[in-house]
Length: 319
Length: 238
Image 1 (spheres, each protein chain N blue to C red):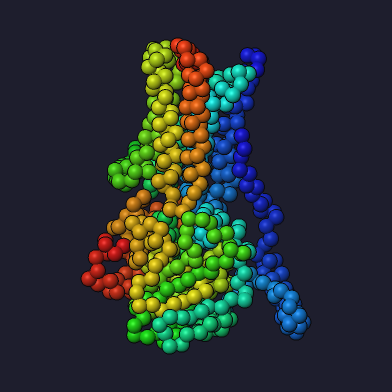
Image 2: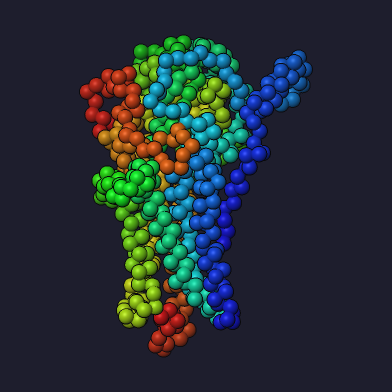
């Protein structure tokens, strides 16, 4: 009989965070000291050094979840649905190291006046990075509490200056068979979308980091959106194109199973997923084996900031 | 295989079938289960996987034994492996009831410690409507429950005494339901996963290969010995 042997790393072998951080800082200082050499290396056609997660400068905000503890960082970064890197939620943290996040650019296209290709460094620097603690609710009925670092997507949209005919914003994720697994059965690239008012809502965050660091690859580095009142799959990862369109764009999970994943997919405890109830969720924010099962809140607890956008809509039909 | 070796081999198979359960307990006790992002999800899949693997392994015993006469001793392990499939299926069901559906384990345990013996029952009553709703509404839960109920009935009737009391024919008729259980278990997995997830299809292929092996065998038997009155399988299986 074969057993899957997952040899746990003994705690004695885990590098203390301070040591790791100081090593990282030394390395960074060294790298910046070497920047002159770096330029020479770059021009010589040598590969750039990828740094992975690195500290982000951010300002604090009032966006918090006072009644819930923040999910341990290791949990948030090892339990990810990112199908480009495998179907299991532990797959992305093992496989996404191949993702190449630098150089990276985002193409802003479609019905807008300022179409352009923007380098990721320019995009990050466009506005001050805010840290916001949001509830994160997966459609699979588990949830976390995560500090995200970014700025409102509305800022970028204003800069792009959409035409009056632009009614929706579409997000297209990286599709690269050289660095991603791209399992069969799913039409790649991953596509998601929001209505223009949803995209402009101050809660919708163009996100570059979490826990004060740049996004881990498995979280959708280097840039993603976070739409906290919708199920997690609406928050597209590793975005390469942002397109302004006049019609509701096709979205990946909706195409795969329209009866399970609606275009809106607002968190709604009264509309069940066909295979499970959405009335409650497993809150993954502690190091306990026993689950904390808590009631799911309408719009994931953000009703007072978003519900008015859906006034008069039948949310049972537009799930 | 000399008959004398069978009891020793049975011990080995017992231990082997218990390894996953011991491993799970160890993962819990070492604290690494708590550090996993979603322990409940892990336990659910762990117990479900092992129930399915042992069930398919059990269904493989007969076709493998038929490959060669020298393998006929394998039949002595069929009931045992089946019972272990039931054991893991029961752990899987308990995971659903106690950990998945919102059952408040800490409160139930605290109640027990404080001497309120009815507290676990009270907690169960709280989540009962959710579970009834699941069974009513969700077909993957319906087929999963069907598979478990079949395994339960086979486990209850597995002792030699019950076999004798029921009579071989009846007993065998009932125990053929193992095929339904295997089918239901695979469908349970298929209906549970998202579109695009393909793992359950591997198990479906394994299941149908094991079924086809039986069909092929009986066809071959008929073609080889058109006058054979009693199929060999009936003799050995009873």
